[in-house]
Length: 246
Image 1 (cartoon, helix red, strand yellow):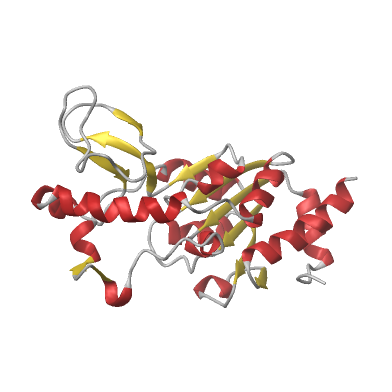
Image 2 (cartoon, rainbow, N blue to C red):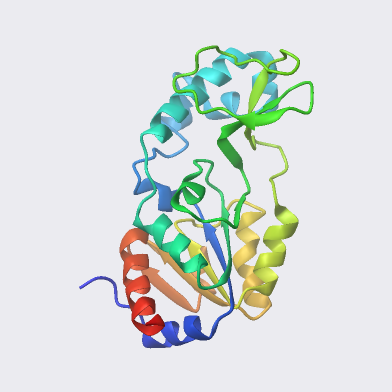
């Protein structure tokens, strides 16, 4: 059966040229990736903020890297799910950008090429002293904290911590302004600046489509609210589009 996709939405998508997509933790939850916070917002008795701030890193880089080593182990076991793959297939038919709050890299792994990772990527590292940036997929990490191959200073995860500016904001805002259709998938869109994107898209005339397991503040302004798992909704939507594309 699948999720009911309104005919009017299919018509809107067939006429669209530019599509923007904002994704959050909900799309990766179906790949088995645990949410950021553990029980009570603690990790091994430490507040999560302690292991996700510049101050915490300066104070105890080994603790922070042990936290991220655990997260990397969990994410390494995950694979892109059908929702990630559906978005990658849709990109072949549209001028389309995925803006994600996730750091797991699963959109890229699924084959999406136009991806803005606003909160960084857990598989990237950057030096605390020089301009080195690179990829590190060592699981588990052999050396904690890892060292820069250029200057031997301590590396940090290339992710955005509390209090740091996010990546790609200008491009994300441009995508929101220019989209004919703007999807909001697996996020309640309450963390700024990503939270403002659906509203910007709406103000500039986009059809806003929300995909989530429950209603959120975005539901009020969305033109379509498709309740269900991202995999099921995007499977059904892609099935309808494929029929029309033939």
